[in-house]
Image 1 (tube, helix red, strand yellow):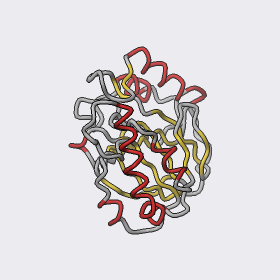
Image 2 (cartoon, helix red, strand yellow):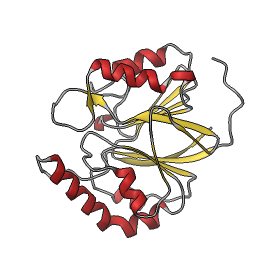
Image 3 (tube, one colour):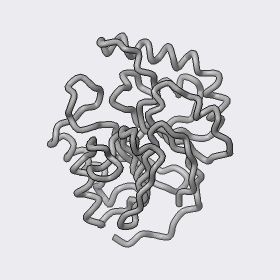
Image 4 (cartoon, helix red, strand yellow):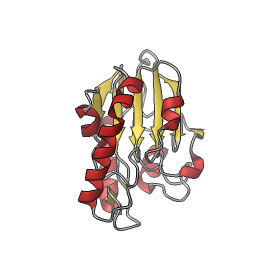
Length: 219
């Protein structure tokens, strides 16, 4: 699929899998046009009950609220949840007064780029948030790529075989390999051992942000 002329560059900061350890976020320096969080930003509170876990995560976010408002400033924040997030990060950040866009398969435009994706991971554990079986995952991928897909794809889990540590999504790998799409950047986390790594393949930059906060130009 032919790509139209690119939009103006956007400086995008990406973080994933901080699990409540926000030191890398506080240490990050520089001005950005937007932030992208691809899941598991909340701490794991060690609670088996998802309702109690979500309550504890929301309380943690309220406690971190003033510092987060200062650090993230007025830049838009693009969010997908992770498999350890029982609370909704997008809702919690909105309650702090931040400009937040929750990523959906249908997506949205921001800074001349189209963003889309989903938080789901392949079913494996049975008790994690956002687990999906193979058929559900294929349906999600089909929704994302309807009409050619986004410029920036955001998921919590990687595509299978791409900086994934064995946790990847096979349906994404197959769809991205076809080439008839607009995706130029795929942002994700989940596989901690590949955090901070990038891979460039067939015109797509794959960016694993696990346990990192890093910015780059996206255009």
